[in-house]
Amino acid sequence: MSVPASQQAVLEVERVTKRFGDVLAVRDVSFSARRGVILGLLGPNGAGKTTTLRMIMGILDPDEGEVRFSLNGVTGKLDKERIGYLPEERGLYADARVLETLVYLAELKGLARGEAVRRARDWLARLDLAAWADRKIESLSKGMEQKVQFAAAILHEPDLVVLDEPFSGLDPVHQDFVKDVIRGLRKAGTAVVLSSHMMNQVEELTDEIVLVDHGVAVLSGALDAIKEAHGTHSVRLRFGGDRTALERDARIENLTIDGDRAAFRLPKGTAPDTYVRCLPAGILVREISIARPPLHEIFVQTVGRRGDEAR
Amino acid sequence: MKLAKVVAWEFRRTAHNKQFILMTVLLPAIIGLAGGGVALFGGGSDGAARTPAGPPPPFLVPMIFAMILFIGAFLNGTMTLYGVVKEKASRVVEIVLSSISSREMMAGKILGQGLAGLIQVVLWGGVAAVVLSALVPGLSWRLTPVQWVSYPLYFALGYLLISALFATLAAGMKDVQSSGAQFLVGMIPYLPMMFSAGIVQQPNATWIRIASFFPPFTPGMMMIRVSMAPIPWWEVAGTILVLGLFDLVFIRVAARAFETAMLMYGKNATLRELWRWGVRRRR
Image (cartoon, one colour):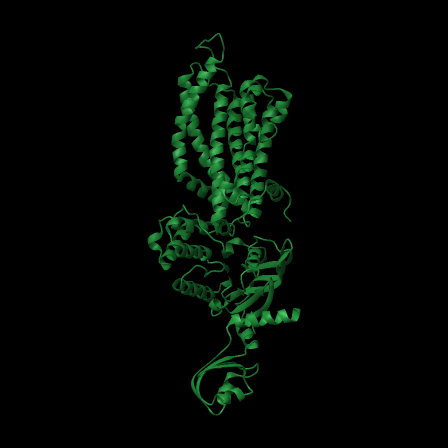
């Protein structure tokens, strides 16, 4: 895949490894984040996502490997002013007020006070929290507080935004809102790294993914390419006619039939288009859907296969 | 620059804290009573020859101010401790540390809260001075230049030391209920008060001169010594310098202990672990 000049890498994680005592939390993980690209660091709980993000943020130091930044055209160490971070374990000063908290956190990112106040007010309005500006944080609901934290991470318009489980604890409406904001960041040319254990929920958002399991990156690359490579399409069918026509069809795999419903997979190499053009004779299609498998399924397939190899 | 912002933020939050405001107003009343008690005690200690108009002992004033320092520093230290533990529990630290270093954060907290605390303590001191003057006739407020310069420095630096000590201890706590042994360590700077009688009698005894250079003891010992006898200038300057350097080092220790401890949830750090994280090299 060719890379447009605008999509330069702002972050390169190179073969990082982190141990906690005997536990190998992250092993040999590499990826890079580029402007205008949303990178999803996905995997089940305990896969090493948060540890990886903490190494990016300099909270933990990798035992091996390197984290490099290229912000403001300067390659090298972490510039905290040009990066935004939403930690997984997050909280705000309970006794402080909403607006002053946002302004303070923005000032710590190097914004001048006036500008910080202006942007904080803007964001509170966008987040539908304008009426809460002078209330204390402790009076906010959990979802509201999370929106404030989210605003704090991006208020200073960083080049790189690192979001650890940005959707946890948000209701579907707020999730959609946050997704829109993240898409907005991509459009504005921000590099976004987000982690989530809910793969299906974020896959529509991501351009590239790194799938991690037990500290190891089991799959990484452009989402489309990965889906293509693992692209055994699943077909769901409601049909009439002769079910044996399906059973005899050698072009399909994993067929299950339940009454007038059938589900099966197209083997690797069979394009949906090819299949649809010559459906088996003798069946009558009432409904049909052909889709790439969700990321979660690819993950299970990959991890399962890896497990077999290990044995 | 950022440090100034953190200091201002912590100062504002402290000054708006209800408990803090209450303490600031309530304590002068208690100091008034305590001052009265000490004044009576000081007047009555002459034994059989009870002369009400007898001159008050020269250590009375520094003693009372040392007491105010230690009460104020203890309250402030406890507040720092609660603050740090609370922020550790509420996880605000990880957000803040994505913008500034742990050192800036800890120094800002210790200085910001300390500044608010010092204002509080100066207010108490003022009240104490008024009470003392009223209760103890003939009390001399004339200080030597050395005393003028050294008192405020011992006071402020001692205050910072106690704050930093409590902040370090707080870094390893999972909640405030699980203090305990930690509080005993926090009491070390208070030990000289137990030997105050000895210090008053022999302000230049060798062991006292040596112990004065041990930073946790410096404020308590030197404030009494400076008021009791002429102290060689290099001892005054030396102890202040050592104490000041120790403060700087200790703020750094607090920050490093915090840096390591903040990712540790649900478990208390032992004093040995705190020592390892704060003092030994991390990597």
